Image (cartoon, rainbow, N blue to C red; front, side, top):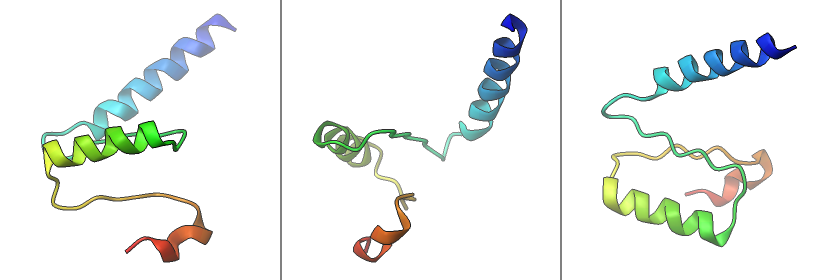
Length: 65
């Protein structure tokens, strides 16, 4: 179904556009690795956000300060 992919692409684009505002930064990570951690650290040091929301496995929550 070629038309179905266009619909999904449009929905994802509209969803992402709703996340992009001047004071909110979205840094999606699908695979956690030392390289990803390095990029996130550089991003946080550059942007200096007031807060950071981390979504992770429920069993690891106790390790997040």
